Every structure is written in C-alpha cells, then in structure tokens.
Image 1 (cartoon, rainbow, N blue to C red):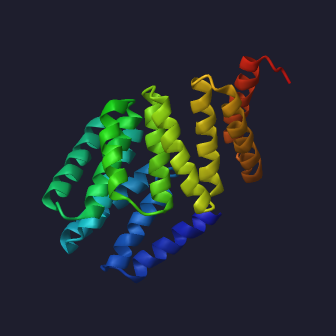
Image 2 (image 1 turned 180 degrees about the vertical axis):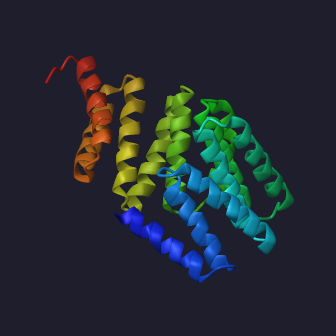
Image 3 (image 1 turned 90 degrees about the horizontal axis):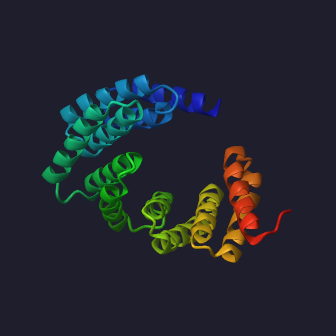
Length: 239
C-alpha cells in the first residue's frame, strides 16, 4: 500500500510538472519504485528519462537512467543490453571528468555489474573508487562499505572483509539504521566463522538475530540462525 501511494504521488508530480526537472527526478524515483515490481514499466520510464535529460542537458539524470538500465537488463538476463548502457555510462563519465556525481554512478554501477556476474576481482577496483568518491557519513556510503566487505569475503580475503564490515557497522550504528546493522552483524559472524574464530563469530550472530527479530525480517533470520547453528556445531555445543 505504501509503495502504491508513492507511485501515485510520483505520477502526479510528472503530470503537474511536465517538462521541468521535478518531473525528470520524479521519473527516476518512479524507476526505483517499479524496478522490482514491474521491470518493463521501469525500463519504459528509463527511456523517457534518457530522451528528456538529453534534450534538457541534464547529465546527472541521464547517467541515472543509464545505471538503472544496466541493472534492469542484467536482472532480466539481457547482458548485451546491460553492457551497452555500461559503455554509455563510461562515455558520459569520461566526457565529464570533473563531475563527481557522474563518476560515482559509473563506478558504483560497474562494480555492481561485475559483482552480480561473480567477477569479484573486476568488481573490486570500481567499488573502491566509488568508496573514495563518497566520503560522507550516509546510508549510501555505509552500504558501499558493506558491499566491499562482501566482495572481499567472496574473494577469500577474510581479514579485509571483516575490516570493511566493521566500518560499515560503525556507520550504520551512527545513522541508527537497524536493518543495515543486522546485515553487517550477520556478515561479521560469517567472517569470523570462516576464520575459525568461533567465539568471536557467535556474539555477532546473536546480535543479528535479535535485530532481525525486532525488524520481523523472517528471511534474514534463517541466515543468522543457520550461522549460529554452524558455530555451535563446530564448538560441539548442541543446544
């Protein structure tokens, strides 16, 4: 219901502010809202943004539409199309070397593209470049730290994984973002479990379980309970 209200509200903005930047930004927000619910509509709005942003010389919004199309096409298995928009992202970034926002979108999107393909070695340099450009204490930066930690974990570099997961946890705690904290705690449990440091892994899984129960995150709870069960199994404590 909340998502439907958000979509209705954004569609009203598009009608009421046709032809100006408010309508353009509303379309980008609408793509985000529709991306999991209706990917075809999300793509349609992305193409609209490309046309309008090009006519209005709005580089940031143009880059945003390209980024969404990379993800939307990759998620639907159209890798050639995803690569095409990735190339356009790179081209726009190179044409605007002093635009930090444009570069950040390019690095984040490219890192995620390779990460989703399981090509972690290729993903990591882009993710680290994005991280260096986004220095503020905000949810986007905290999420990037978490993603970098996850990428190091997938590469088997567990010490760097734990280092970035701890930095992410610290920032999510400052921001009082409990969902972000729950992801970091679970990841840290996995880091220390893989390092065979079971006494350090257990408290992170316990804290993750507590937060996920509070958030009623049933799917996330399964992951944390599984991790905790593995710890007890390794320690020979069957409870």
